[in-house]
Image (cartoon, rainbow, N blue to C red; front, side):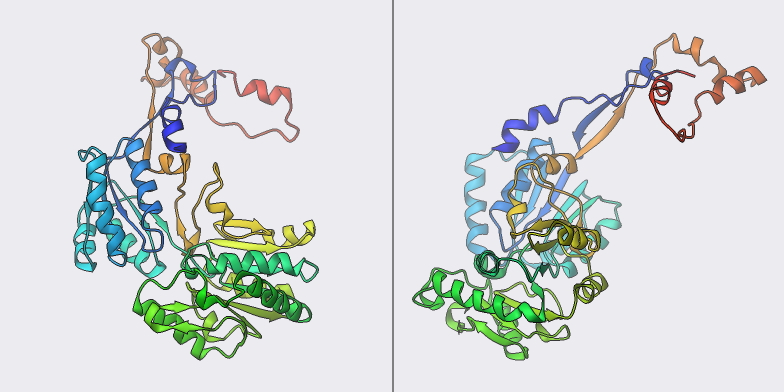
Length: 408
């Protein structure tokens, strides 16, 4: 609805900052469709992600091909059946299939590609797009860290983190991957997790309404991490292979070289990593790929700024997790290994639009810019020099502001 309510305003021509040197050219920026967009949807949020990108592509005037995830066949079949019933099929088509179909699509030339998924597949998509110089938006993930201030309210921290990790069985690109906390505060946080776990699941997580892993392969991978870890189970740990169910599981005393720290977990396991100091945590974080999200739990403004200034991530959130993805007006996107390009609301519209610069030269301009035509005399060179950029003054003031408007 946000895009529907606002896209007409977004399409209006935009005038650049006024400059007296070039006002006569009537410069305007027009947002025009890029052409045909390929959207490769994810399995973890196959409905919302796919439909939102499709809506943005159509709103910005593009035609669109949507490749649904093969890992969620029920959702894919439902959208394939229902969308043509309620939407004009002229601007879009839906493609289903597995790796061969995706590979065939990537061999074609597109005007923009939007991919949501793992970093490894993202590299394949980017390499295929590069053959045609196709602009690409990659929404990936990463090992999203939490930096927990030992003076923070541990109950609040545990409550918000366990909720986040349980949602969609931890299969969310913004979900917390691990928690850094000083050794002396680890037990207090672990006790808070036990309390919250009992509140959330009074009859045990097996009887609660909790998401499960998407495939048998995903289940075996996450279950394998539980079997390999040397961390201690604080709460959770239950599993049921028949349902592909693994309870939200918190671990403590997890070392940086533990099996669960080798890569993005993307499942309901939450390791607590005790540290001597936060510099060690920052060094480890910055030595790995930039995460999609970095989280800090603290009431100390200085600690918050310290973490912010010494990390790089797509988003930065204080005292909560995942909420940045649904806040209207905020861009959503990664940096480095977690992807590139921004989406959500107007940012999706901008991403899938081409900002076409336009201007119109009136006849009288030649009386002002006649110096551009040969022969080039000293007088003409002097006139041309008036258009060259100037070095900002050491003490800018009104004079500098007024000069930016002047034609010479």
